[in-house]
Image (tube, rainbow, N blue to C red; front, side):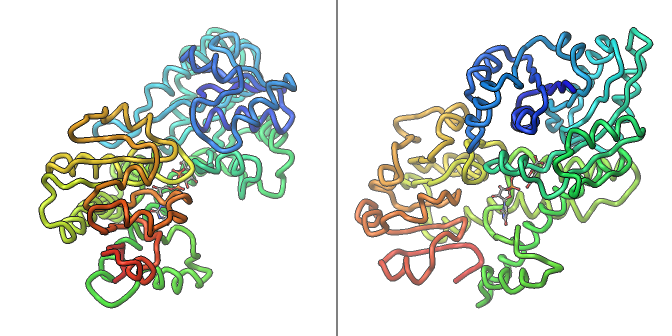
Length: 434
Ligand code: UGA
């Protein structure tokens, strides 16, 4: 069986390398030629632990290759995974133009039976549209089937998530497609959930929105904790022991970012509304998330009063640790707001500096990119913790204090223990804790 993977973003690249690792013949394709050249040498264009190694291994074995030639890739494969982007449009809906374009190309090159699998996160009923487009534009008598196989990998642990998934959702409408998909995931027979296509599509959006809601919920509780003597970390720990709730995704902080949750919760709200369903629950969760930035800025103001001309260090720019991805990262909104207030910023992140430079170029008077966390805190009036990278947890805080002009920490991710940092002489503000 030969498999095509169209789109080599996070999902496509990991899918291509992962399917090759399972022993399949895989061709990955993307319209960005530079990217394909780099990937063909085994260099992932994104920072993702273990990905370069997996690419190199399977490129070396000869069962994985990459090419910009979309037409011949479609013609030569039996199963086509569609992994192109579904970004958000101005109204919060998923922009399906890339999916539509790929559907037409599949139609034009459909020369034998193929299964077209959507792997990108798409609104429920997308497959029906892809099917209509392929049927409309196809030039041969060859037949095809649609399938949905949503991806649940997390950035930062994407390779591990793909190679040992907790479930694999397969949405199909024919026995022939079912057999092919089951064969691809043979290894994980015990973890296969087979449904119809609408159900598979909805499982993905419903899962991401639920997790986003869980985070907004704990952030709401954190707001109550800040006005009382309660401690949000202990509240989360206490709640999480109930197996019906579970302890994951109950970390209060700066809210969810990244390319998935903010987009998916809005998209599902739109889908529901378009279908006539009241989606206030999801809209409220999203509103709480957007409000996290204000809560954080107010905290900085409580510490510093006036932000104009204050020198502030930001540690962590990526939307979460172990990635260089800054899409929808809390850091961007915070930087924008602090610059608007007139502060001078010193930034550091272990992986995301280059990406951030594309949004905020260095400015000798207002914004400096620093070589280390210690460099960033030199002479600052306050230190902000934005992303909980492991290296920040193990900072030598005595040294940090010695370098800062004023020993003030505003911790957006609760990475330090209040009594410890205060014991060292810091003024310390965190989330949902005294
Ligand atoms: C998320 C899902 O977890 C994946 O299952 C899914 O496949 C993926 O979206 C996707 O749709 O492609 P990801 O965006 O990589 O994965 O990141 P998460 O680890 O889920 O974190 C999302 C955001 O929530 C981050 O900004 C993180 O800092 C925040 N978060 C997470 C919290 O604020 N509190 C928590 O307790 C957990």
